[in-house]
Image (cartoon, rainbow, N blue to C red; front, side, top):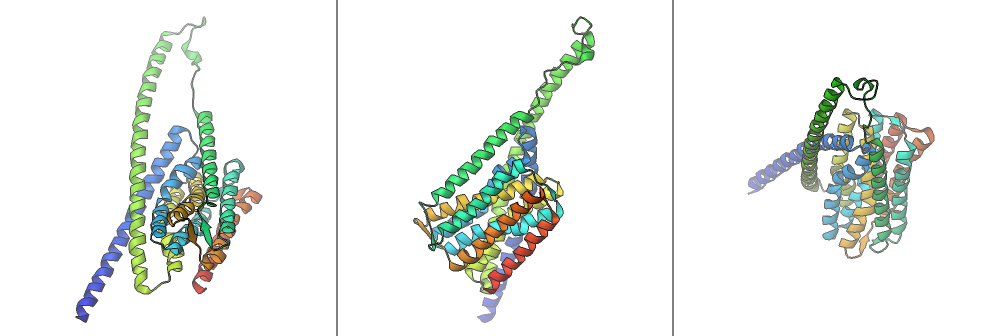
Length: 358
């Protein structure tokens, strides 16, 4: 009987590992499609990649956090709900943004980043102050939802302005295509006809390209979400075999697992040298984690979402520190540097060490 149970357990572990790896493959492929399609949509629509990253991409890559935390809150598991959201922000900056800066340092665009960076810092400070009583009140958390709405509205407004500014409108005429009296030459007529044909063909091709990009964007999102759910579900099951505490599981396995879409998107962005998409995605994802996911969890949990002592006095203070490290050095030096990335990564290692020890 004991041998049968041992064989069953071994088989269960092997199946869990296999499904965990399936989730990893789905996320990697989904991330590739996601970045490619988002970049193409940005290029074709004239919207800056940073804006696409901070809105559309960040919403797509935070779906695993939203799903996981919402389920946890509904089941009364506040430690997983909060640990996942706050832990994901820490992982996004301390691990993912740090990796991005180490491999792809770039200039700090004050106009593009400052408002969004301040919003991210403000979000975690407001959350921390709201949780000092030991819980997150659903009614007070409406303030966080307002911050989220303002953040998204600002991105949309800036995106529209940039798209309008970048839109190419060709109203000129080639000087070589007119006679001295201003009438079109034969070659001018031919050129005009050719131009009109080319324009119609280009417009048709652009429509096809946009449709194709949207399809791959949706497929990429589906792969990422499905893959992340596999990783979290079966990764948590593996952790359960080892008897790891819930909060540690939440800020490590679950938080990093649900942040894998951001990690894969960032790695793909690094390979394709799309740094604006990477940083925009991270900042947007963090604001969504703090200002959308946690208020939703508070509402699902019946109006009050309990906050553990270690979450309040370890996870959140480190989160404030990470957001400051992500923005202030860049504002001062006017660039995202490798040194900044190294300091952030070292701080994340310290955070994980303190969390595990305490």
